[in-house]
Length: 192
Image (cartoon, rainbow, N blue to C red; front, side, top):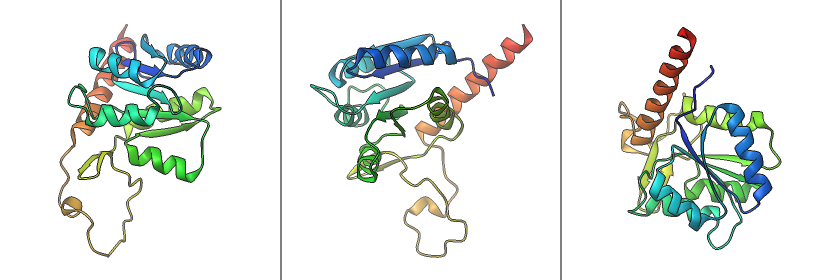
């Protein structure tokens, strides 16, 4: 499905200017018109607090604040306008340990450089169409790290709500609202 992304605010963070330019160009082709750019996590945190983006794409290694530190701030800082905002980590590091570290920090999706525009688009669609419930535990706040449901699992329940009907988390509600907004805008465009 094609989405109208013209009003969606997206923040890209990378300390390499050519990567910022490339990502912005790709996102413009996808239809994003409201793209904010930052060269490090500290600059990005300031933009996040001021502009409340709908989606964030961040690099990992930057100074003075890297992508993981930035993600922790977005998820836990009381000044963060939306701790549930989807965050895509784009990095050249693809080892299992790195991916798990990013996931455990609260990253929503992981994108390994070099990537294609299709790879980036697929991550964005994943966020819109299949939002993940958020978990708020003593030592973790972020998207549920479980990616799959085992239908015939018969062991003990790991969470109280596993056996109950799940309420939508704010992240799911936010993503569902974004998806509905995009569907409505697509219908309006097709009527013209």
